[in-house]
Length: 231
Image (cartoon, rainbow, N blue to C red; front, side):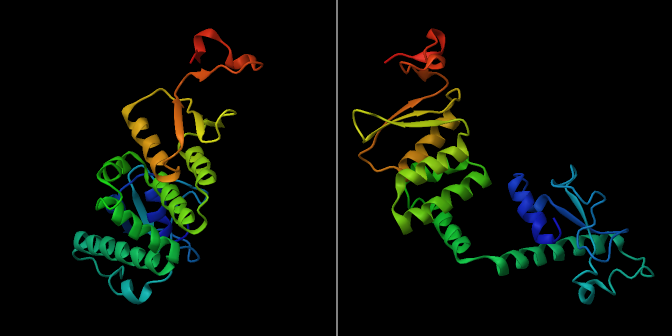
């Protein structure tokens, strides 16, 4: 994390609201870095969400006089102003770096929130974290371009349910058997429903197996009586 925009993206990944990040002027910093972390190898935000910034790295023309060490009045007001301005500059950094796909994601997400994809999805999308939502939106863009829904379904479900296994029935190529390796909860049920509804054709027949796998003849670990589902 070398720049202020890195901090906002890291906050998104850690499910921290951007407005809960507090930027403060660094007292000790490297002239070659914008973020003044004591640990240069840090890959997560500090527990208090306070980030020290070397404002002279890129913004000396903005903060040069304001942060003059000889100016000792209204410190609290100056720190509040500094935090607001750095947040604003970080958002500008991000918007200037957005590629076309990022704009598409924003528009799709707005449509989802507004119910353009149906009321159920507008509600269930809240069960996903920011990283999972990004996978969903990227998958939708790829789906519109390629139309390869089954491949995308496998990719998205792996990101959300890491130990899942998806089988295509030997008897019917429109039937999927999905083992999720998770205990069933309403939250997870809503998640898998979203993924199925977005990425599978409506003529697909899907059977979900949660924390118990179905037995497969010849594979011993799937044939334990207390750990399988018998259809």
